[in-house]
Amino acid sequence: MLPELLSLVVREGVLERSRALSVFGVDELCEALHRELGYDFFRGNRRRMLRLLIDLLVERGWLEPTRSGDRWSCRRDGIPLPGESPAGATEGDGQVDFFRRCLRLVPGYLRGEEAPIAFDAENVRVWEEFLGCDEFQACRSVLLDRMASTSGASASLLDLCYGPGWGIERAMDRWPEARITAIDFTDVFAANAKCRAERGHARNAVRGRPSSPVEWFGPSDWKGFGYPLPFPEGAFEAVLFSCGDPYIRPDARDAVYADLRRVLAPDGTLGILTRGYPDPEHRHVPSHWLRVTALIHDFTESVCAGWHGFPDVGENQAMFSRLGFRGAWNPGGAMNIMDSALWILKKR
Ligand SMILES: C[S@@+](CC[C@H](N)C(=O)[O-])C[C@H]1O[C@@H](n2cnc3c(N)ncnc32)[C@H](O)[C@@H]1O
Image 1 (cartoon, helix red, strand yellow):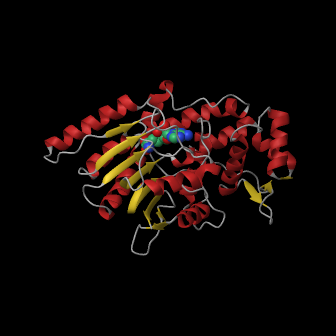
Image 2 (image 1 turned 135 degrees about the vertical axis):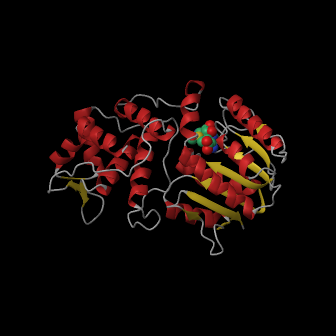
Image 3 (image 1 turned 30 degrees about the vertical axis):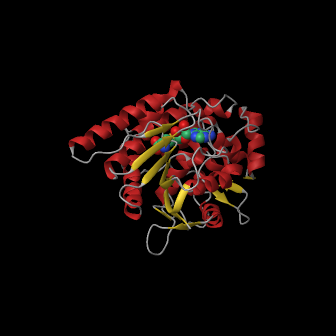
């Protein structure tokens, strides 16, 4: 995706405007792009998208930060070519197709069009293909294996924001005896997710490891992040929260995770699949290509309704400690691994 995104930056004239400003801060670049390209930075997450772009261009050596770190200039030694991305699937991968679809929508979105991809009936298929990609499925497996090994075999598991149901299917495969409850704030995914759960159920029966039926909760039970979950205190021994964290409003993060802690049993496990925002110190997200991927993912998914982006990892760790979670990846008590994409927490 990197060459495609960089060529958009050139085509749209963002690079040219940055060069013309010589040294600039976010405000000055916003103003120039608003005036000359008609970008609308006054609503939603568009200003944040510009910051993502700046961080990506710094990462790839196109921009250089000044010593203060909050102003930038174009590199004097010319603009390096996009460079080779590591080899990987480019055709037919649900993730790449999704990012391409989003990228095509970016110019209109930056000029003020409404977020074109929402969690609605029109986009069920789009989410289905994106979220079923190999990378997310592999991450869910790692997360669920770890969760199963730190909880009881027949633990009660909540899949928070089940979406198309890929997490449920994976949970039935990796953790067949878990008793699954699934909740989402929309029911547009319910039919597909139920089919997926039925298939998992049938596969388990054939393998001689019967699983319990899934319990379903929808929009009549829960209005989404910021509203309390419709479950009593300590209802679940584990919660799987995959690819939903960036849809939590920043000012609601504390309340959402405090409520998740409430529904967990003592010593219950919370497993999260997300990404960390690449930190300037390269401490939490050290690998170059994972930093680049996180920035591209965050930038492109910004055209989806309700996207608030990947969280700051240091802030996340502080929040989880403050709310009464501890890290449980390993005996050392790490909260997160894989450049902060996977988190395992225990309720203290
Ligand atoms: C990217 S999908 C992930 C779905 C699923 N967990 C997975 O891993 O495939 C994000 C999920 O968050 C839900 N969601 C989005 N915004 C939400 C909100 N404001 N409150 C509650 N759920 C939300 C969507 O319905 C969707 O199921």
